[in-house]
Length: 414
Image (cartoon, rainbow, N blue to C red; front, side, top):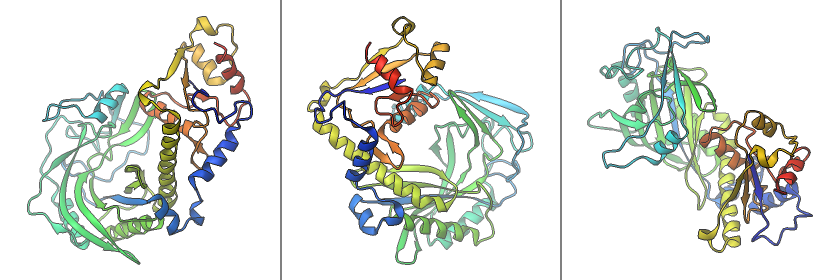
């Protein structure tokens, strides 16, 4: 797929002298990006860094949370006893509405495949049997950790449903129960407030996600898991890691949780001033947290700068339109494309689309993260929403213009 930028509404950029690499470096300075090791608290205060955690920890029990299958046994080989194929579809809520995220997932037309081993899977995992009574051993461990976290224990335990729309749980939801609310942990220089601690079932392990087919193993599904959720009290990346290390140490100090790769994972929530919360899912090593949160906060800050640029250029957003054209065999037969993904798409008769974005000149090569530009944001969404594997697009502000430049110039002649 092609994305091209037009000079309309952007007379300040000369097409003959425009250099995407130089534009990337200039916008990087405009955004005010600095490497994490050179950043200070003043740097994070300026962009309004804010972060919180959802720390997940598997519990050391003999059985799974809502059935009698053994917990902690993993199928390391590629063999399996059966496969279940499912397709996600949206349903009306109690209010008579469709969930927007569910509708988006439905439109991706994903086929979800679950690989089952008899040793670790029963009819509960594939949603053919109601849940068994909750595992008492897991409940006792979760209560102990809740008290260590200075949480207020709830009067009644209610099993609720949390939507899971990526297919990692066959039911489409996760069974979860809140045990404790409003606690705190102490770091070196401050206290971090805790929202809650929940006891829930773990999801499947993803094997692959290519095109419209996503494959999971069910051996991990249903293993008892606690989730500790903090308020967004962390004001720099090092505080986020310190808080996560504390929570994971607290969990392990009981000697009643699983250890090893994948047994502890965290979702890290990050936002900047004027932005919105973005969740970095499944971070398995706390050492990765500082760099990930630093770059994500600056990514959001950069996107806000891009928003301001487009608002200045496009006076009437309602009148702005994307211009596109399908490049079928009739109007490209005379062209010999050199870019390999386009050559392959033509061989497979896949649609190739040329897109013109009026006023986006200089935006596609705008800095977002180290080594990444705004065009990468579009490419990522093509992968997630349209399920088109990378490389899935080429544009007029490529850093490397060896083979792609010639192809783009040809399309601009159409």
